[in-house]
Length: 292
Image 1 (cartoon, rainbow, N blue to C red):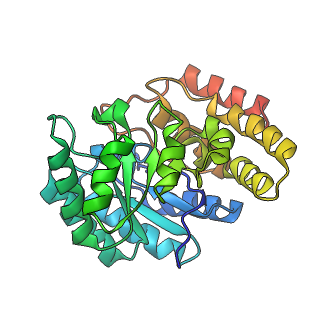
Image 2 (cartoon, rainbow, N blue to C red):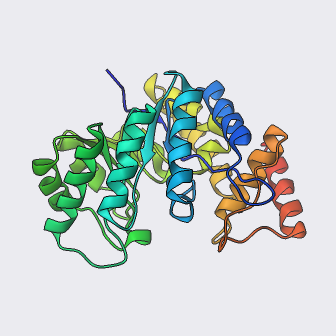
């Protein structure tokens, strides 16, 4: 049985100098995280720039992660798109590619009724017939999945397995857990407190830059050593503190590039690259906290 728990970094999508998907670098970032002990990946989500990629690129990413992992970790592939038809097509392909689960944001841009949101998830989940994770990211989608809405989804979507909870109201984690759902906290700075109220792990971008720090936190908590877990949370959060508004993709790619000795490219437009001064300052900060 697939276990949905632990550290699931939201992995970046490395790009080549001309802005195309860099498959070789993608595999290296995956392997770096796997060797650090992560339990899985949240693939082509917000950190992975999925909404800025072509459907064919997202499909190729599903094939890459399934091939690279070889069953060693669990891949949860994001298939969210503005239309239900596109999301369902991506979900069907993800299942054929060999990922273990799919995740999906709710329909965005146009406001939809609860009934339309539930039907969207029903169709997408049926296309893959894999465990489905709801991607609760209201700051980006404009739609918050409350426990009340999740109950409606749970009643109509038998493939529902859990969610990534990236909404501001963290106490909902407890409600989702009581519903029998695998709830990953989407804020890595709050991983430890979220675990104490029912979260099964963490999905966020910073852990793919320093997976060893969040793996240490997970292992300390699982062993029952709360004092060690608290220290690990503080140590890990130093990495999250490197993140700046509007620059996350560039920062993550720069840090991983420096740690692995590879070029992860720049964010896809309209994402902004770091200036040379910003890049130097970032690496200086990373060195100061022992990351480089």
